[in-house]
Length: 88
Image (tube, rainbow, N blue to C red; front, side, top):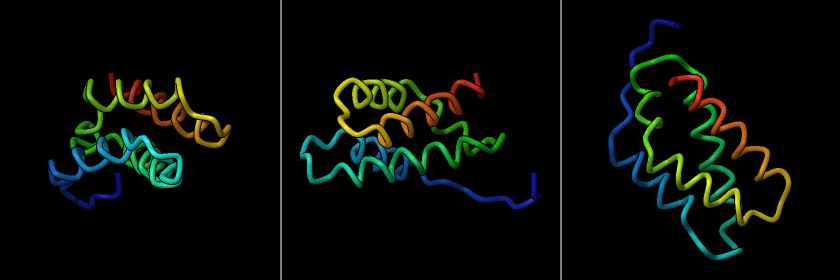
């Protein structure tokens, strides 16, 4: 832990969930970056990273994994889910 205290507003979690649930194929990059954000923040063992360890995010990631076409998106989703599982 670097000693830096940072706070993630609850609205950020909701925004990431909305980004993951976007249905248009044109927004796959938005989904990719939302998943990368979740994976990166969840890599830290902080109270703030545990905000992403909620059923809504897990279910959204799972649903996206089931319909994702690109391998890089699938890999990022799997990585994000594995990081979330480390907290539980």
